[in-house]
Image 1 (cartoon, rainbow, N blue to C red):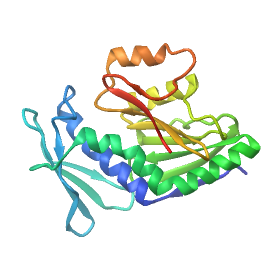
Image 2 (tube, rainbow, N blue to C red):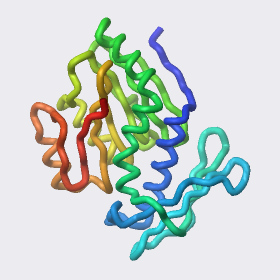
Image 3 (cartoon, rainbow, N blue to C red):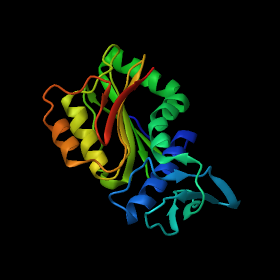
Image 4 (cartoon, helix red, strand yellow):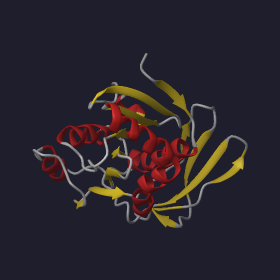
Length: 227
């Protein structure tokens, strides 16, 4: 039987937290600039609740609540921000690799030996789904807008994104997800959106016939490597 697991980790909750903040802003401002939005450090004003204050000068923003699978809630509210949202987004793949790198490197080592790929899908409800795929192929199983991010495995020596990876990442990000990544035993290459994916960036990535070798910086999408 193929491996299928649901787990809650520090990384999965972090991805859900950042996703909730991004969704709260995009709910009211489709043309926002992530460099102009500032976010406070999360705090816990009550049991089971995490409060994040967002400062978005010139943009409308109302209280926004996002419930996680364990019954806790992330509350995003207008307030005083500390750090740029664009900075938080750029750091997110690095934090996921720091927190989850041991697991991902181990799975990628299995892929290097057997060819079987795995995918770790970070869900918007704070959980992570670990799924076993096929030989040199794995995909998100129709989760739509339930996926906040995803990391699949590549064999050793292939820290780049194939055309199939790029198309999968575009699909995830158009549905609201934050990043798609591929992990090897040595590194993780990621495709991350900074704001809503622009039409120009979408076309450039969609028409890339041979995938993408990092680094790449477009207006709203960045491809980089964590090692």
